[in-house]
Structure formats: C-alpha cells, structure tokens
Image (cartoon, rainbow, N blue to C red; front, side, top):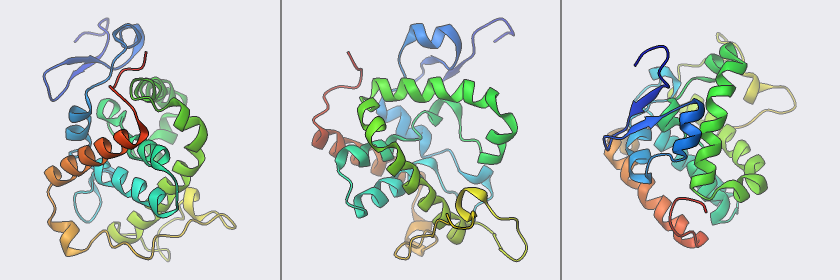
Length: 213
C-alpha cells in the first residue's frame, strides 16, 4: 500500500476490504456477519487496560442485554448488538483518542458506520432507537469501569460521559463482568454468542439477507 493507494485491510475471510474514500462507496459492501463476529470477538476495549481481555463482541452483547432488560423490542436489541459492528474495519479507539483526533476520526468512522447500517438494514432502527442504544452503551460503560478498570474516584479524573453531575450513569446492579464464569470464556465463546444472537434477532425482525436493496 502506497500513499496514493486507497487504504484497505485483509479481512478474516481473505477479502481485500476498502476502508475509506471513493473505493469504499463504489465497493459498497462490508464484511459478512461471520467475519464481523470473528473480528469483534478479538478486538479488546479500553486499549487493553482492562482486568481481562474484554472484547467489542462481549460489550455488544451486554448492550443488547440491557435493551432487552429495559423492555425494548428486537429491532432495538439488534441495533444495540450491531452498534459497533463497523469497528471490524476501523478498529476500536478509546473515546479520548477519538476526542484527540476530532473531525478526522469522525470523517473516517461515520461512513463505515453508515455503510453497516445500510447493508444490515439498520437505518430505520437507528432513527427510532439511537437514543436508547446510546443510553444502554453508557450503562455498559459504567458497568465495565466498575468491574474491569483500575478506576478510583479518589485518584482518577471523572469520566464526563457518565459522571457529569445531574446526568450520572449508574452501573448495573445485576451484572458482574469479572465473575469466574465470564473470565473463563474465550473469544470464541463471544464470537459464537454474537452470531447466535444476531441470527435470532434478525429472524425476529423479519430481515432477509444482508444487503439492502
């Protein structure tokens, strides 16, 4: 790859996948769900600083679980499961990294997220439920910080997205992300669980195929 060549990555199934620019739009596709699940199950959140490997796939399953517990339907749960699916192409960057990059990150990430929503028939659900998914995402973040991060409010700075006075987001009381059972799970467990949840929710939503017309 040279400076004048449109950037691409090789995905788990051996595909040369464009990740930005006109080639992304012309190609018009993102990886199959099996490839997405494989990738997300091996991408760790928190830049690898959590108490154990904690993947984007496991996080996505937690977000879907939170939405289900809050009474949201299968369309919202499916959107929650897939809300970070584009990270199979962009990778996961910690929020402070995204803030440091500013508009450059948004210009890179947003087209990938939009393409996933188009291909996987998520645009209508995104319009209806993006606020609910964001709140579930923050509840997951608060729970992950409590259980997996070496965070001490007496020593560490507040996290504005969940610690703003009057808009605090509390962690979940009925979830222990560092339980022995969870800690013993391999990345393959989360890959397979992600795929199974996707297939169940997709059937419930009545979605056929992956590529939108």
